[in-house]
Image 1 (cartoon, one colour):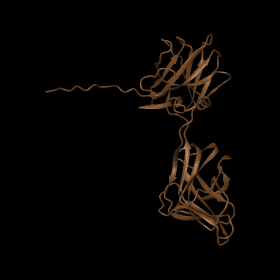
Image 2: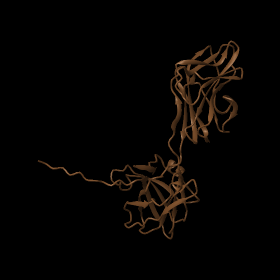
Image 3: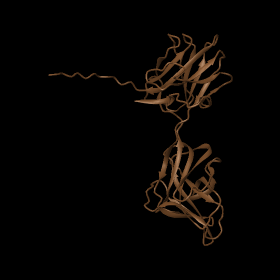
Image 4: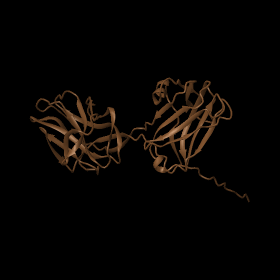
Length: 327
């Protein structure tokens, strides 16, 4: 079993430079496998620090977005806009599985009646006695989106992601401008209901009512940037340098404050070697939330170009050969 820290597969120079931030001046480039030798069958895009300056490069972990909470049945129409002079708005409560960084939300448009106009505002609000409070759960928890058209979904990505607590009720609220009489959209609701951690609600001229027998179609996208190396006993990566010797220190930092470091000894210049670090003695509490990789030159008296690739934590598994008897 292994846990990826960084496989260094950056698509552009800009993406790599944005990932590894210098404390002032260290040169950072991306190198493709057409420029340097590959290591086995790796598709190599490596980070290279090319400088005689004694600078530190820090890579802040960014996990992959995924859906933590969702309900994807939306074949019942919920009104959004004006119905006979009454303004309707919609909402769905949810609870995250744990404290997570929220990056985006998604809802579905079913139909339109008349010619509703304007955009939608997707908000995450706190709970007030079982209905939306009107207060944002975070200052960044609001995004304006264009209605996606009948039968389509729309994903609103927040300009600045934000952290929300786990096991706490929040509301995804769908707002729009006030519409003229009987001009409205309908958005996807479900009457099964299939979602266990919340329910739908609807506002009539600003007064919310919760409906436990209904849910909205919705998705909550999150990012879990910390990498958990608890129970991992080895930290491995491939490294190549233009100088031999121990000239660069590589560290992994836990959000609790502990930095685990190693200074690899490069035995052959311009040749990849695998670095294996025993982290079995590092307490799980000091490696269960790795938030950054830190690269620091320790001997900068002359230029040194380094490449690092395929960094991960692992639990070594003993290999037991099988013996076959042919009769």
